[in-house]
Length: 398
Image (cartoon, rainbow, N blue to C red; front, side):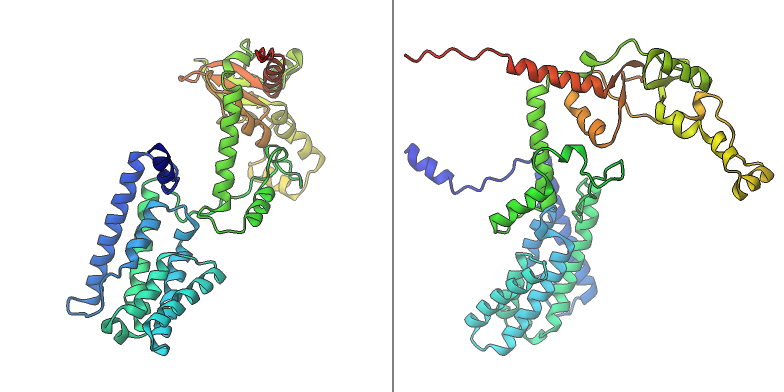
């Protein structure tokens, strides 16, 4: 009996787990989408129209657009182009092929071929092609008008509602690929987190070797795999928190501290960043060596290159002032972390976005410490060293 149950379980699709709220969101979206599409179609066609207000394939389109809006098969190009092309093919087959069975088979096969060629594959479009062939006298009498009314109208209305509803309920739609992460140093090297482990190029190679369409976009698959990788890092290093590795004796400055005084503090303590705090001790900015190099050097550059812009600036009274206090050169607002933040969460910010220092602050914004790239490297190295030095389990095998 157990063997039979295990065998039958293999027929259940291994769907990704989703919350009850997401299921409810999809159901309400499909309800509103079909309802609004029917109401608008009725208003546009009029009560006496013999044209169907809704066609059955729209139900399948609604499942995709509202339940799996991230699917490549549910994108705007897929529903509009896929449904219209499939309808054109179905109407053509119905007109030129007398046998309905042969016409149906030809319509489906040709529709899939054209949709794959135009990258507009949309499963409900197969039902659209079949409806054009087997829809009966009303559909046949419409001829190619069936492409516009109701197929085109239904598809467009459902798409507009899906765009509005999905975005209002927190789902990015259309599901555009995120822009590629750019190297902050403006060089051809990939960002640090993509130099070790699998890369998007590796993923494309694997998908090519798989040679089968899968219902997930490559960028989503890449994101899922990276999240799994980060989860594995958390599992390995997850117990290390910022409060354990941060420097607690923080040298900070006030926004009214002079630039010369702040720079002297950097040199005296041999550090590269100073959190800027207000009179209540709350973090309002940060000043780094880079800020001194880029912003405190304005006067000397202006003096060395007095051009037309500088002269006009002086005449108009908008010449750039020499920075005198920290508030003139600090970076604000500043990114910071909580003391209970896992150190693995610092890797993307420090490796890819080039942040060398991250202040640690409590819920009220009071500075508790600062974490540097050196602190992060030391923590990960120490943990890895401890893992290697763990004693091997005893073997009791005789």
